[in-house]
Image (cartoon, rainbow, N blue to C red; front, side, top):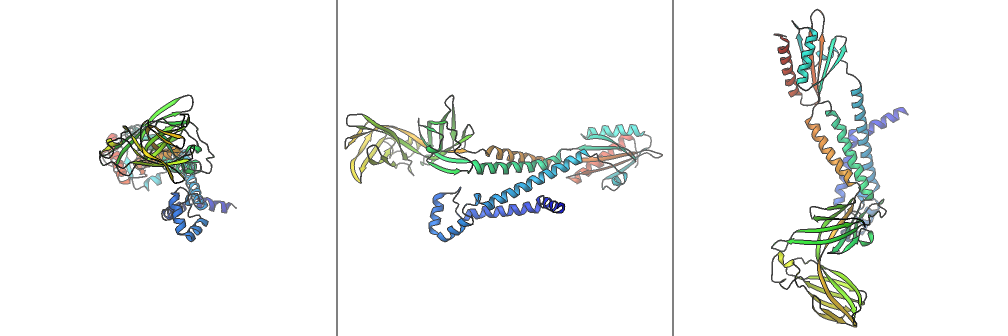
Length: 472
């Protein structure tokens, strides 16, 4: 049993296992780029591919290749890699702690066997005075000096960069954080689209999302339920009509306090752990009020008109007016000069006009142009064009694992940088007393051994000079 446990532990610590696991994960990621994914991918693309390839779609669905990132195989490989990394980190940390607790014993034979070994014969200096001068020289070079007893004489160990080796397990710990954050993200992440018109308020809740991209199995509708209000939307366009950027002022409110923040495409906002990203789908929204012929109000709603693909073309929309049992097709012009101006200024809302066609069972009840404040009458109803404002889409993301992933990323980047820069250096010295006092010097370095040897030669030369030694 003990042999089996030892074999299992050695396999868990194996670097080859980590390489194989990373290789298999890489293959699955590559496969996901060729086979449309049902979960986490574009659903319309997946359904189109499934309709065109029913046999392969059925086969790949059964073996989990259409849901790779939620398949048991992918989860198993990620879990195995997590266990491997955790075990290596724990083992490495244990080894370092054991090495620090155990004082190094210095043997004269081991010093003489070193590739960087020097011997200095003491001629006039006393051993105690030589020890003081050696300690002073080492401290001047920023070494931490510790005195040990040795059967061969007085032993000194000088260490510089003693924490350099700790950055290796720290880097592995950063990988563990990234794995852990990724698991939390995959299980609890939520991502959806909200569409807001200026001055409109929406509650952060599933019912208000027009589209939900992701919903982790452990999310369980854990919404924050605060208010999101679009205070102001400012589109900026190039002279060609192409969008340059979109700016939004968003107000968050939890019933007691309100927080306003400005966001744009490259700068999301954040509130109570929820991220809100500026979307690139936007347009102008028309406020249409429905009343009866007596002027009694029935309903009032903003209807979204999509942004056209190029400047000069009207914004279009098709919507149902359920209170009147009709539908409409509309073409909205933001301003009278819409077709004439070929610049971003054409997007400014100035005296907008609405070309409106009201239909019932494919029968046209009204067809005409409405300016702000004007009314269309049909079958006992009045539809008034009350206002026009900008609207835009926003991607709302709830991701508890994101801060952990970022912490792991930065910790890994810092530890990897320090690991490559810092270097632990050790100089071992034995002052041998007796009829012929002698100083034995040897050293080792974990990295950059050539430069350390030059440093050790320089130290030996300074030591000889300080001790007044002419020859070795």
